[in-house]
Image 1: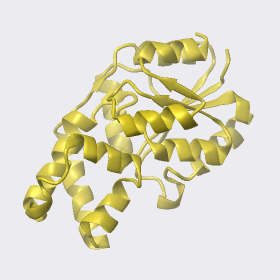
Image 2 (image 1 turned 60 degrees about the vertical axis):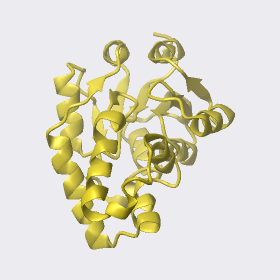
Image 3 (image 1 turned 30 degrees about the vertical axis):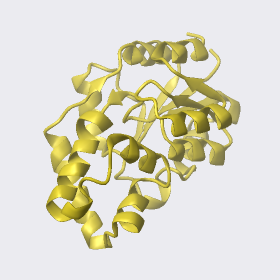
Length: 219
């Protein structure tokens, strides 16, 4: 097997959640608390802001939220997510199952809360990940920090060549680069030219379909 550790992002990599959950929640929040900005962000613009500079920077630097308002938005988002369960991409569960069956370690590294990651995987009948790093880990360890990947390598004794990170956004790319491991861009959730072009130019691999991940892992 080409890799021994698969580090998966959650949203728009394992489950289709931005279009069905995170973007609608974002717009609903703006309508209530920043109505003058509610019409400013199309879905594509929202994805681009998530890609770079990142969701926190969007909230604080562009929209202008204070630390207290950021906590309120996080609670609003968490409450919204509580009532909405995204659907896993077809084939991703079989890939994870086959990878684990051959002795691979699967980690989820996400900006979603751990309890919702666990819920989504269970609801979609996905195999339980070996490790989950959610939004509730210490702030300094979250993507784009490489801390979680380095911790995985130390915990299991993996070399850099044995780890593959799969993510749809730049924080995941930055995390992988910081840890010195291979990165595959998950391009199956949406097709935004600016994101696609960056990923194709800079990443080790660009995957347009879930089936391409199976081929890359040599399962």
